[in-house]
Amino acid sequence: MNDADVSKQIQQMVRFIRQEAEEKANEISVSAEEEFNIEKLQLVEAEKKKIRQEYEKKEKQVEIRKKIEYSMQLNASRIKVLQAQDDVVNEMKGSASKDLLNVSHDHHVYKRLLKDLIVQSLVRLKEPAVLLRCRKEDLHLVESVLDSAKEEYASKVDVHPPEIFVDDVHLPPGPSHHHGFFHHHAEAHGPFCSGGVVIASRDGKIVFENTLDARLDVAFSKKLPEIRKWLFGQVAA
Image (cartoon, rainbow, N blue to C red):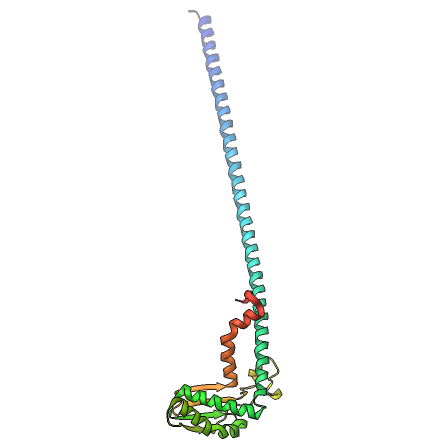
């Protein structure tokens, strides 16, 4: 083989190697581009997913805020309704309290009521000696019915008539314009009593408050569910 043949063979080999290198480089380039496109697509999809998740999160937050705001408005409305109902009930009780003032105006009726209240209190305490407290303006009426009240109690319970000591300390006087009774907050102007009595055991351990105001409070509390139902229907139940 002469030099020309050797040179030709070498050139062929060089062309072959170059061609293989170019093909390999092309394959690498194509593969790299495919991998880049796949990675780019994955990154884009991941970013889209992240954006969707952020959007869904914010959307949920908005919905939660809307629900909270709605709940707060609903509660505020309910509180307003309940407050309005309480105002009506309190006005009704206030009106009943004013009517109590008329009870002591009729001395004949009130005198009989005082005796019944004293008897009822004695039956409740069942003590041989008690201390009675009343309003100063009722003192003469109370003293006038003490004997008959003791006898009626003794007859009812079948015991000896009890000793009743009238306390020198009196219950507060009845409410008036000066006491602010006809305003919403009469209590702020001091205690008052519309009538009735308070009877206690001599040692003060047992006390039975049988004033008109106390009886109204008890009756009102007991009847409050019925009153609310009558005023507001099933909504107030």
